[in-house]
Length: 388
Image 1 (tube, one colour):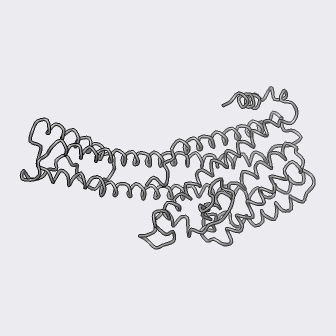
Image 2 (spheres, helix red, strand yellow):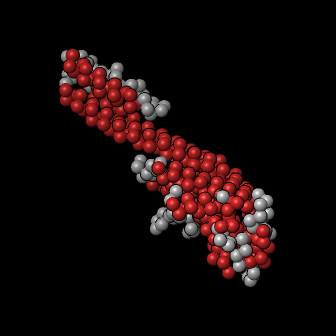
Image 3 (cartoon, rainbow, N blue to C red):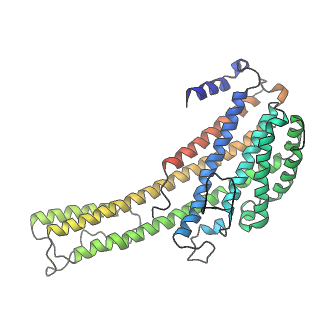
């Protein structure tokens, strides 16, 4: 945390001294807005992984929407790979965004933008101060409504929220016409149940995101293990079977060391469908084992090290995503709590010592910290989808 932010949060959290943070707490409001910017970015990173599942399937010659076994199981959750354009924070050129993923992004954008607007209005901001955010909210909801009407996968995804989106679009349109902040806030307050329904739908979607990534990584890990079996293990095995056992102490030692290293690496590939190579050898009448044979085996070991490194990277990537997804669910729960708290804040009594403000600020910190955790987990553990 930099010095400026440290000073900001010191001012925010030391509430008895908040009077010293002159007037309406602009810095605190900015910090709250930053929290929701981070929340959108964190959600975008999670949803990008779902898009990668589709992109990877296509890049490997699997057509989304095809019948099993040609279709990886995770694509059933994402539905037909129809594509759309929208603000997800990723996807460009020929990498358009699958509509089911786009819907998730737009739903999260709607939720977080709605919260930001209500916060500013609760602090007494005029209507003109939230015009831009109202426009962003309208765009997200319009896009979501369109997807709900056209894509059955999206309709299923947000089944619990679908009936609320249309009325919320109308409500936001009415709010954009109003001239006073108080009137805008009163209008938007009518949409609170709808926004809570969208949050709930996003939380209910978390197990689906888990399933998408679990199956996606199972497919990739299985492909890696099978390729290792075909391209590394079998050539090394054929080399050993094609040569007689080593006949001198030096060669015996060399062979034992290199095959032990090979088998130790092999053991890191879970459920590898073959036996260790240490016990493999040809008949005594086969080609004699020489130092050249050891060098050839070392080349196979080097290739196996690369494959095992890829396996470790994929496994670490999956574990990081799993942890990030748990944090995301907790973050969404906090967003819902913050939305409920905002309804209790009185613009004319914003800093009264009634506990509401402390809860509001605590929610902002929690949302921001969870988002930063998600970003850190996914940035530090990102195995390239085109690596395999």
